[in-house]
Length: 136
Length: 216
Image 1: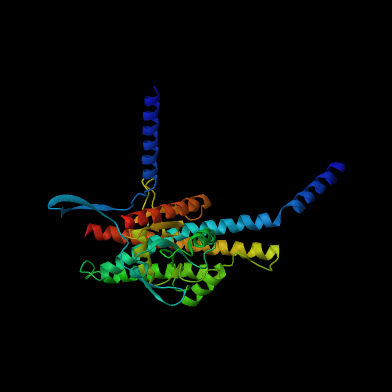
Image 2: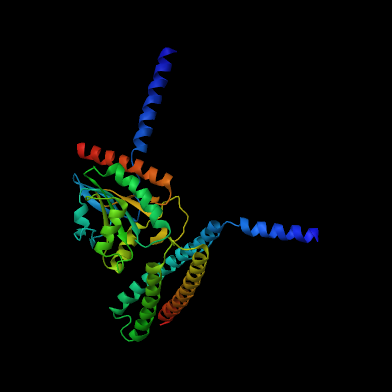
């Protein structure tokens, strides 16, 4: 019984000592690290879009512009999602409780991870399209 | 023996001066080409260094800024966006040191290109500038067509010889030092205080180099 009591006290002590600010910072760092890696993909897609825009103005894609146009639309939509996320994201979270901050950052992490997957999909589609152009 | 010691002393002094001369010049980065020109009646091979291409953007005051606006200036360029939660606040905290060091120098400027023009309108850039505490025309925050900014960035992002063959990104936080001839003379990690301090030293070297050339 004594042992059980000691274990319960120790468990309570452990949870009460967990630093809420440290938890918030760790989660914020994860969100920001994901944001930075998505930014590199955003640049990759932006450059691919510029290339396709340029090719559409030349004879290279004259007979095949509907696929390229559709691809550009997908690239723009994905980049817009990222922009929207960036504009709304609040890294400061002033005046919020610990639970509110953790819930907000968890949700933001999910959102940026979903955008990351969208970028992967659009990059794959772009690469496949480039390969199809080379084959021709 | 004395003569020998004096001779060695003179040689050492000369070598030290030569060494200082070497340190006082910054390398020129980027692609280079050669062309044969006629100089004093002789055909000589001249090196053509990469330059920053023409551009047109708008600054935080709503004024148009082109490459001509920087004619006769040494400048530092970087890329950012006002809602950036990660590296940009660190970069611009470091850039403030550069601004404070050179804000009263007439032939030096800082240009920060926003990569998010949809959000970073002229009033947003002005508010951001006010938040940083910058005024006057030593540091311009620029915005324009996103494609134009990305195309221009390709000219700025050059790998230093000592750097590995990694891909360079606009969001890597680079500060790029440009001379009065639009050549790239330095590339620095804008998030690293020590590298930014090195850049401040290089700006002084570049200004001294330019002033010496003018004097000649």
